Length: 309
Ligand code: UDP
Ligand code: MG
Image (cartoon, rainbow, N blue to C red):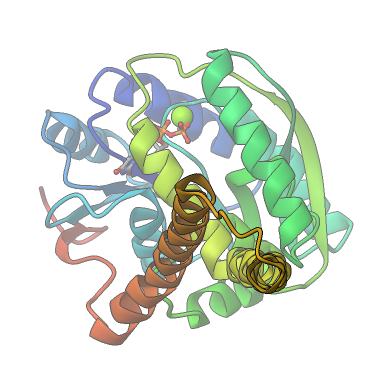
């Protein structure tokens, strides 16, 4: 069986379209399927609309979370409830075409891949947002050991073994595309052009997008720590020479060391220290989150085959 996991947060305007397109894409694939919609605490009519669709299509299940836990937590919740031997992940805004699942499925079953990710060969839509994504992938590729993840997102299909490996990683701060690249297995790609969302505004605000990028970088790289260490070392060397200069000036008697150099060095050192504290803080905060060990999401109700809405 094939499972599709789709997170939904305030998407009432596009649910009908989404359900129709996804169901008809899945029907072209020669296997049983379930579609799990994870309602990530939507405040609009999304949940009700999903439950209405569930009455029409027996393949639809709805996992309702107790509040908004965020995109990555919603995906994780769906993956943990999926029963399929092969599991797909897709955003709920139809930026990724469900019709590609057929090709992904073919690659997995015929060419023996374990994981197929959608790779964006281009993007339509708002350019500033795309530019941030481009910058993020450029940085991520260069400062982490994770390769092969460039221009992929959540849109993907995985064999059960890979899904289980992914779910074994219990970290609270998670970036699924990175983890998916991290677990290994035989990975392949399907290229596509990413569309604009068909309706409404992005539900990942820019702030959420930046936090996700920070999570990705801090959990897969020690570059920020290295950078502060390097800055600290450079500072130390520079000020060692400055100290020697001051001493010589004092001995030779031409020491009119003005306030400007003093102030500059205080500012310089002070800001390096603040930045370093901030970077350490980011790691400490994430360690703290992990050690609290709170659940990643809380289920309000799972509407599966047996539940009547
Ligand atoms: N989403 C979610 N919880 C959130 C934010 C978003 O489940 O807190 C869902 C949203 O409904 C959509 C998907 O995640 O189906 C991707 O969101 P969006 O299109 O806003 O993100 P982007 O395409 O900019 O990455
Ligand atoms: Mg989107």
